[in-house]
Image (tube, rainbow, N blue to C red):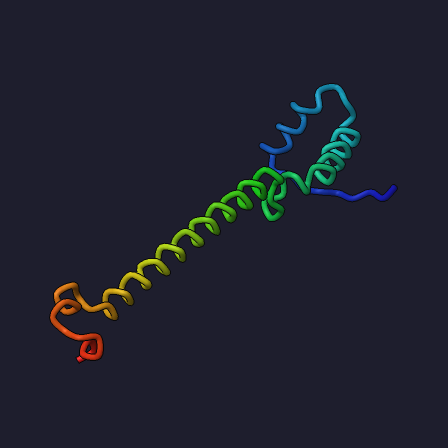
Length: 103
């Protein structure tokens, strides 16, 4: 095993002393360091949790569905506008012959 020394603030040192109880200081600090590296991936803010990833995937799915609905509505709106621009009104149909619709 390798040894190393650290300098702690008085307040942090007191917290360590309270938390370790009657255990040896080196054993307690060794266990704290081990538990940090064991649970690092689940508590590291740079690595998202599985629940967070799942929520994001659900949100992405929801937003994709909304985008599809929006695209369908826009397509329908464009078709309706195109039909209104191309189709002559009912009065024009009655008044004009078929070859005069576009005048």
